[in-house]
Image (cartoon, rainbow, N blue to C red; front, side):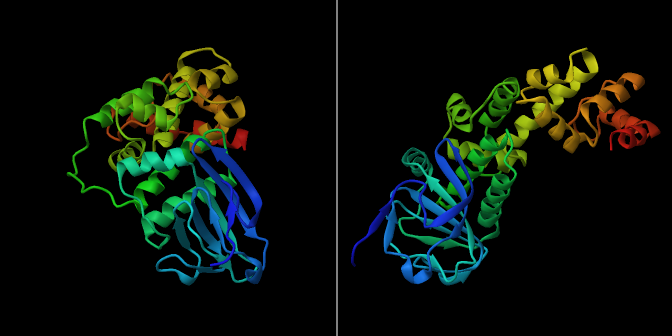
Length: 309
């Protein structure tokens, strides 16, 4: 077989374009730096994912051989291979999985024993979302990326049969836990342990039954709380942002405008003029949301957007 080069955690034959470390995982967008003939036989200490973003690739993974993007390849720890790009024009997302995270996932379901390539829409969509999040990294990105990495492990695992479509009782407790702690930093691992379910199962089931990730739900709760503070208190915007759980006023303003279509200051002025008591993210049929649509359809909103554009 020849000499095998063992690469430490988070190391690949590539140049980092962007790189982030989150609890249990390492993420990097990379470009190849070695011509294909120079890539040695090697192994990674940790389990790894390689998402092909562009370029043609040669892999020893099952159902891969010579392939092209989009494709996700999973290599268990210690897998010996000579996976490589055919040219230096490729680009990939590299994900290293810590032994602890891998052990947590293996407790939930059996992971592949050999290198495997995945082309299914669900698996690729989760991995591609991680690549996009790495490109636009924000203060909320670590929680979102942690959830996506756990979900990715769940998607490639041979999971136990689904007992049915009914949401388990713990989902309600999870929602309450996240809602009550939305103003504080929360990790999925901590939430899962508090509820008493496996972290991988927590992340996957939360998305399945609530149609959003835990990170997205926390953001909704924070925006809900911030909007209430803007309507009902005299707090400066910076203080309202911190009390609602945002890292700073800049991040708060960006997320608020993305959700509501106008900055927090404009939102406060509109609702004070109209004396509305409306909470965001409620079901469409509530009286509050009907009132919100009435107010936001008035010229006030157009005026505010013109003034803040």
